[in-house]
Amino acid sequence: MGQYEKFEFDVLVVGAGGAGLRAAIEAAASGVSVGLICKSLLGKAHTVMAEGGMAAAIGNVDDRDNWQVHFADTMRGGQYLNNHRMAQLHAQEAPDRVRELEEWGAIFDRTRDGRILQRNFGGHKFPRLAHVGDRTGLELIRTLQDHGIHQGIEVHMEHTVSSLIKDGDRVVGALAYDRERGRFKLFSAKAVILATGGTGRAFKITSNSWEYTGDGHSLAYNAGADLIDMECIQFHPTGMVWPLSVRGILVTEGVRGEGGILRNSEGRRFMFDDIPDLYKHQTADNVEEGWRYTQGDKEARRPPELLTRDHVARCIMREVRDGRGSPHGGVYLDIAWIKERMANAEEHIRRKLPSMYHQFKQLANVDITAEAMEVGPTTHYTMGGIKVDAESQMSAVPGLFACGECAAGLHGANRLGGNSLSDLVVFGKRAGEYAARFAAENGHGGIDDSLVEELSRQALAPLERESGEQPYAIQAELQEHMQDLVGIVRREDEMLRALEIITGLKERADNASVPGNREYNPGWHTAVDLQSLLTVSQAIALSAIERKESRGGHFRDDYPDKDPGHFAKVNVRVRKGADGNMEVDQLPIPPIPGDLQQIIDTESR
Image (cartoon, rainbow, N blue to C red; front, side):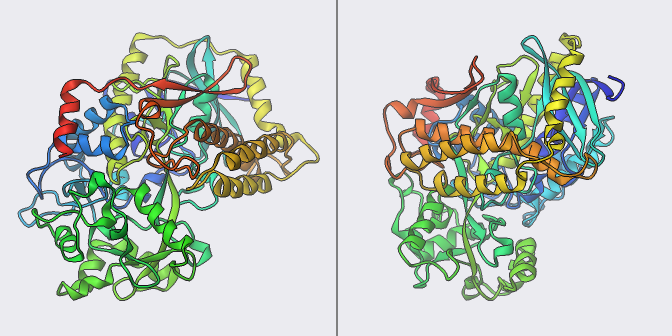
């Protein structure tokens, strides 16, 4: 064991995005020792790509907003697959987490009287998103890092966790390797928090960065934790579609929140063609009302471009499928039209959407203050993930906690825009708090040296093979098939075919070979990531087959309607069986307590 560098912490956090940083800060504030592992450099977490804002019912722009309305919006957006207690805690605690960030130095955009400004976003009844232009996630990361460096947290950057270590039923540590030199490190911990983000790299077209390979989902699954709602993948309606080199890069919902409208190739604002009954009482019935609402008129209603993301994405795909799309397979998103209604519109757009202005100017040679953008759906967010306790964020495996995108429950079948950033800080704080409590009540577990040796040999296996396929080719094939067969529109025969393909790809991945040695070897990193991608892809396909209805981010062409009976009352669960095979079943959703149901009923009128 002399070849392993060893570290010992009370709490080990895997992932340094908003959730991981907030968890580490809270655990350290409790007086325990904290280690933080991140796959990339500190500050380059995927959280920085969350641009539009952080949802919290502060009521600075519309004083009718409160936690009850936010709770009802979240449950309705999630099609009631949500964990109601998580939705309640999130709505109640998000305002305090936003104010806390302000106290720690976050610089939000301001109302004229100096309060935190809030903007409209899809699925939210009132202007609710606290924001910093269109760079809110970047400000969140900057603030948490600046605050966290004073907490005594030990950071290990550019490390990949290859396995969790268990002592009996309990997680007691993790095996990781340094991505630069390929050296293994053994981390012993009384509690482990996973905050590793989502699974977007399982698909070909995605807004997600290279780190999003489902590591936390896979680690937890292999450790014995349950995964739920893995069929619920959010395809953000607006990603760049041209040029191909930038296809999938996110175009923030903030563009629509500031007045951007969607048009097809005929120039028609097609979102008025399909407004769900659930939202008709909240949605403007003409262009003028829709525009006035985005300017803060309390009496006007939400424009149709700000319906939930799953609905907008399907409407865009309908236009493309029916031949009314843009030249490169999307539709047009137009913010330049506000020049008809606003003086100094160009300055307003550059000030409110600086990242989008520069992104399109530099990457597509498009001036968004003067012309429309071509956009289309892109794989964006994983609503499903590790099943956790609402209060503590602990999984079914003692000592293993999860928060952020890799944890499930808050968002149900579809996440509302802006709820992701407040999710990170609300449940990151709770995970850190309760993991520290668990660490204080439990000692370090035993770690079997022979197990660690075996796990390291498994990770190094691709480097030991003299012949075999390159992992890049296998990953590219997986992404292609997931996009085509388990994408926005699904059918059982196609998903069954996807499962057969995934099984074959697993066999090929088990025999993949990587030339070179462990130092500076991105091929090896791909081989390790590929195992996680195959695990989550199988979980997504199995879960999507199991849910025989359409709900939120899960749309089946062979079951196009919501099932108001059975499937409205169950989460789909995936777990590792005793024989090592992946098993899928259904978990009843606990009934919503009467007081919370009354809030939903009242706010839905």
